[in-house]
Length: 405
Image (cartoon, rainbow, N blue to C red):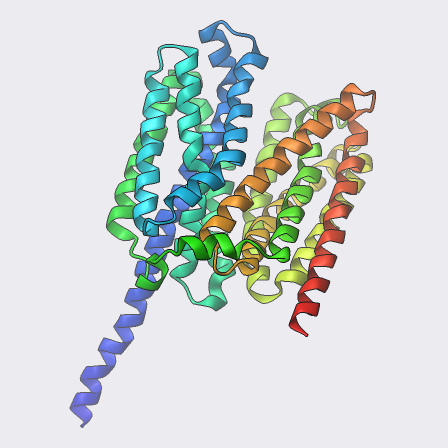
């Protein structure tokens, strides 16, 4: 009996770590998937001057590449997700990554501006659905108690895209040309595709997709409330963040190079915030979300005053990065919790809600400036919107408690 016990124990002890290692490796691949998708979106901002010079078009005309990409993500993302729901999620992700690679190759080879626009639109079609599918696969590979951390791990790819991917892509474009940037993105996406094919093995129950169940799962009031929180909170943040560079230069007195450093500081705060958001999502999701929304409103309101002194402006940028990033896994987790039978579709729609908030906030900030308001007025406008998100979150919590009684 002693012998049989001693031989059985190592098998048990090595099985769980082996499963955990496979899950960790798969999560890393899914994070890389989100990283490359996010990089493809954000890198365009840094490439605009080169594209303007190469195509002999004014910046606003070339800037339409950013606008149309966001619009396609917002409108077409959920439709593409509905169309691909019948595929097993891993297979769907492989298809999406294949289209993504093709879109970036087409951009690298584009011999006219219109072809480049078409290539970007093709890439944008995969954006929300690839993000959603990677997220749902990740959540399905971990225990329910660790769902928030899995969300945080995958969304870390998004933060890394803004902190590392986009600047690196811009640097490649500056030194070797914008076409090389798209070649590099396509190559990295091809590596990720191979990684998904070889290393990502979702459990069978999470591979099965119910088309009708996903659509019906969205028809809940709490889903609409969570999406409203995302749009309004992101709108408040990007009313300010869109114009944070001129704010820091003209009001705080930082040089352009110092502003670049401060944006990197924002990114470092975002990395810490992503970890914080994941832990809050697992332990106190609604309390954490409400607290962070209150914090966002407070920090934005304070920015009108702290932006006038350099060191307080720097601290504010850091704190803003922490809060902004911490909100992402919490909001994604609440969206998944609001529609448990529609994980892929609700994640895709929440990605569209994030983009809608970004577009609305930047538009509102621009309208405020053209109407005669100043840069120091933008934080107050953003704070009011964030306060609106707090009210919606409180109403959602109240609705949740009422439905449980």
